[in-house]
Length: 179
Image 1 (tube, rainbow, N blue to C red):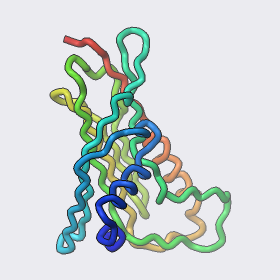
Image 2 (cartoon, rainbow, N blue to C red; image 1 turned 30 degrees about the horizontal axis):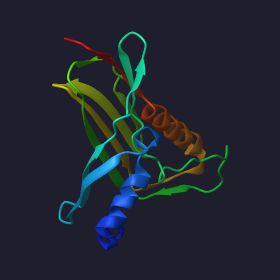
Image 3 (tube, rainbow, N blue to C red; image 1 turned 90 degrees about the vertical axis):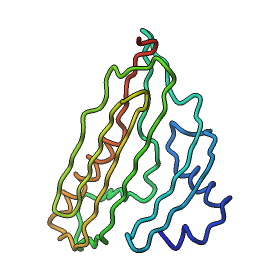
């Protein structure tokens, strides 16, 4: 991924980020895309700002729904087959997504998704959502361990991926006009 990001022009990088945005952010305006590459720490960070004025879906009763599936899962395998004969080879990696959504004044949390932690020998997934000082924060961490998963554990891999997909589709309900 690092070499791919290094080769892209600013315009190509912006297009790639826009392609990676999930359905709730379609049509967003992107600004200040920056790539920070730290080979010593083995980290690549992509930072950007975006404006999505129609991001909330307003509901009766002064409520607003915010869908939290902000990024597509283009790289997440689907594993559609029920059975597998060959083992799976996982290459160790970690993807950390931290998103801060600055809300307009007078928005308060009505209902936020509960934290999710899914732990398997081959991978870990964590997802947390919180609201503090007018900022809705989302942290998502997916860690794949460098290992071979036997075909006999394939059902566990499918269950893990399904749990991640379900957690990624969480929503926050906000109260509009809170004091």
